Image (cartoon, rainbow, N blue to C red; front, top):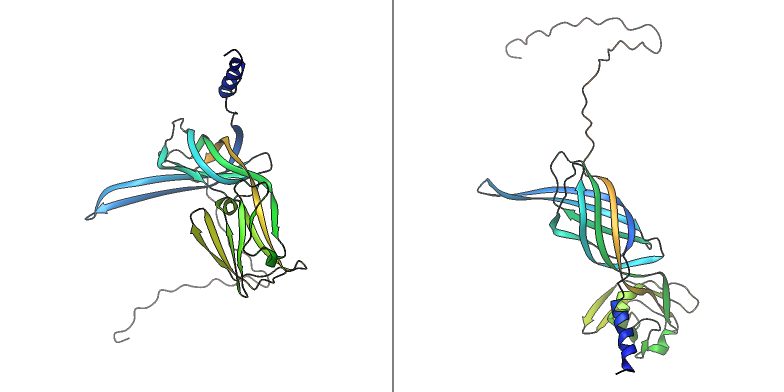
Length: 287
C-alpha cells in the first residue's frame, strides 16, 4: 500500500485538475431577422409565435478552422430597456464551413417589446469541434497501383481509404467515417499535374464505411489527392457582443420650418409667357 499510495495520490491530483478555461471572444453581428407567425381557426386568431434570430461572427485569434458547433448555451441577453431576454424554444446553433479563423453562429431569442431597438449585451457559451487551419494532403499515385488496397492515413485516427475500382468512366473510392469528416477537397490530376474534370459523384453509406462513386475518365497513371483537415478536438468559447441593433432607427421628426418654392429660370432665351388656364367645357350629349 505504501508503494501504491503516491501513485494513487498522483492520479487523484490529475483528476482534480480543473478543465481549461474557455477562450473569451468578442463577436460582431452579421445579421438580424425578426418574424411573426400567426395561426387561425375559422378566421379567428388562435395563437402565434415571434422569433428573433441574431447571427454572430467572431475571430478565433489563432489559426483554427471550425468543423462543427456542437452546443450553444445562452448566458445573458439584455435589451436596451435593461430587461433580460430568454432563448426561444429553437435555441441556437451554427455549423462548420466558415472561413478559417472565424467562428459563426446564430442565437434565437424571444423578441422584446416594440420599444426595444437594440440588444445591450449578449453572451453565449459555445462548444465546437475545431481543426488546424492548414490542410494535409494524402495522395494515391499512380492510381492503378492502389486498386483494391486498403491504406491507413498517417496522423488521422481511424483514417483508412481504398480505391475500390478504376473504370473507363468512373472510379469508386471507399473511406472510413474519419476520412469523410476530415475531407475538405478531393482532387484528380494527370501524371504531369493537370486537373482532371469530374461530372459529379454520389455517396453510399455503409456501416463504418462510405463509398464515393465519381463520374470521371481518370488516367490510370494519374493521382488522387485527398486534402484533409487535422482535427484538434473540442474547444469551448465564451462569445460576447454589445449594442446589437434589432430594429431600424426611428426617422420620424417634427418639421422645424417650411421651404418655399420659386420659378426656375429658363436656361436659354426669354422666360416662357404665362399660360392662361381655362376650364374644360362639358361635353355635348352624344359625345
